[in-house]
Length: 330
Image: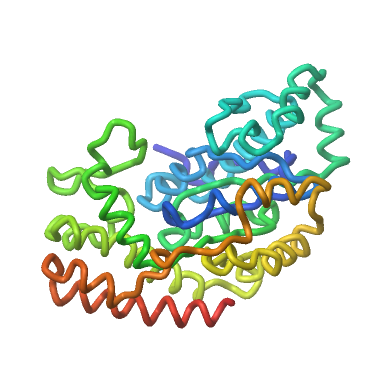
């Protein structure tokens, strides 16, 4: 019989002491924020490693304990940081947005591949105290396990939010409802619901999801994430809330300095000398096209014939909740 008093741990070893999480829905603007974090002093190239998401999902489904989650997360974050410091497992594909090549950091990381590794790297980490940005997809709202399990290692948890009606329209136009759990190149976890493969995040509304048409599924996907984000944040302790920042894409894209200054203060850092270059590469600040500001009424008018009255009610509820949350955390 399994001894319940035994659990995995990594309590006596630590390298990654300044973890930053960048979370949010697809197309919300995470890849606009992440390169900026990587161009703050002491910060490393932002990492897109699905293990942080997948471990969180396993815990959400009750398949792994929080103690084990914490041990694996701490190990993986330490490995990520150490490997970055020696240029190991770095993605140098120039066309990938997560690559140092795409973020004007190629020379920094390529030069590290020629350096000696070992204790000298551990000492350098202690001396520099690097910031490790980790890019994840729609975890907060369904589970706060990353917030709780990284503990003091986590210095900042950023959730990027965007006009939910723009996201719904993008989800519809991209046919993501049918690509999820079907397209071989969509490397996400799904689960079996009475013989139907559906996305992991639909667990709590699975019956409603499988009975909905494709347009309604798109609404339910964004609606359920956002409503849960708002609720989860309001249930956090004061100390946990202090680690949270919500970045609203429309505000950040047009006026980023206020948010960047806040991030620098929390992380006790400042902009790198070449910071303006990455801002220019990302075209921020920028003016946004009208499509970014699609209203709930415009979305309903465009897709009304495909939406039930219950779904239309949820859209209007989402509109009010999003506006109220924006005022709450702004």
